[in-house]
Amino acid sequence: MSSLVLKRASASRSSGTWSDDDFDVIADGAVVGRIMKAAASPVDLPWLWTLAFGHHEDRTPTHGYEPTREAAMAAFAKSAGGNDPSRRPSVSDRARHWRRHAPQRTVS
Image (cartoon, rainbow, N blue to C red):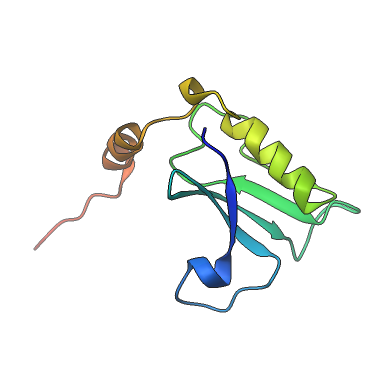
């Protein structure tokens, strides 16, 4: 995976009200996950990290809690595949996955 960038949710998303401790994780221009200070978390582990849908296939863990934002970023990078592109699905793989698993819409 290319380098990971944190972008405040308030700058990344146009709708909603976001905390200053809520970040989107971006790689190759796409949001691949989220890191935030959780409202409810294990004691001394306030930072939640999670891989975005479409980026967690065949990866474990897909989320976790860490004591610091930096530790959450490191855990995220490790789970997401770090700098090993063979562990990360391509954009076309993610699109195929979405088409297979997206809810079917019916028109009456």
